[in-house]
Picture: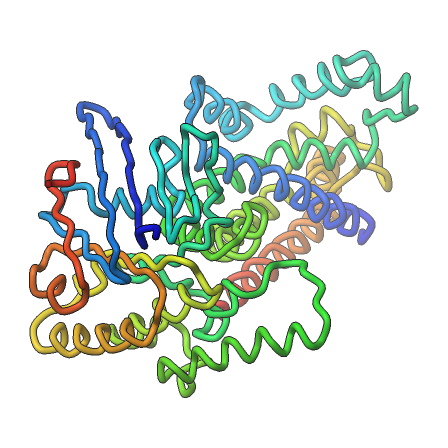
Length: 217
Length: 226
């Protein structure tokens, strides 16, 4: 019963890290730069939040599947195949949770007082140092809130994960898929236990992260 | 002999439905000059251009003969290399850093590996500034816990920490009024007298200009007058 839990936590942590790096960088970029097609790019980044997860899963198969646009080369050049692997689940979960981090990070960077960066520049700092020592810490609460939501979303990911990684017990069967599997099989006791387990873990994550956010203030 | 400050700046700023043309040309032989005019005249924009924070500015900026910007000659130092200290309106202190960290920011670059002696020298410089501006007891305080006058002193000390060749002050007293304003004006005048580097102060108050600066440059609707 604990195998799906560990798998879920592993997938959610890695997916949050991946989506975190991409989401923070994209949020920063989109908050600072204006270019033709800005609104379109924003809509594209938000798409995973509104698309049905199955549609997203289908897109992912088209891109990273064995014969996919990218997947073909991953297979040919590196011998990597993401279909029906937990790494594929990480990709699915990170795409699904990306908009949550991106949106939170972009809003936090846009809210920041632009004079802070200007002041840092007159004091001799380069752009990377301004980002790491001024912009990111000042956007910290917003970014942390986005990461927390993304982690919760990644924990509960179902549709896209099922399409990419399938339902292989011990290999790609995460908690949410295990619950579905147990109910389908009429294994009510198993389903109840898994449900309680995932609820407890989610409560724990929420309480700990809100603690962390409070103590920063 | 070079003038202390030699500025000739032009810029066109566009925002939807508005176009603002800036044309500021002035020289000053004095250490401390005031740039005066009504709000919206473009004074703060001139400061941004001098500091290197207005990419569209063309013309030249020289301080004691040293060139910071000369578009005709293809010189345009980035802001971080201009050595221009700036005190922003409302100070723009880094809210997540203590007074001491705010001062150190202009002295110590990220990822820089320094010998112990150099680190000592940096610390000594920050200590001296904390001492000079009466900030020793506040070194561990965060900006939100400081009074207006204390913030002003921190902002000035922070701007001076990297030993700039020019100091810019943007409406340093505008956040204050009444008796406090008068007291801080006197305090600022005293501090500036102790700092022997070229200074340009933006203000809309004739009294501030008269008390703080040796010369006054008038500005209106984006243009320097006379």
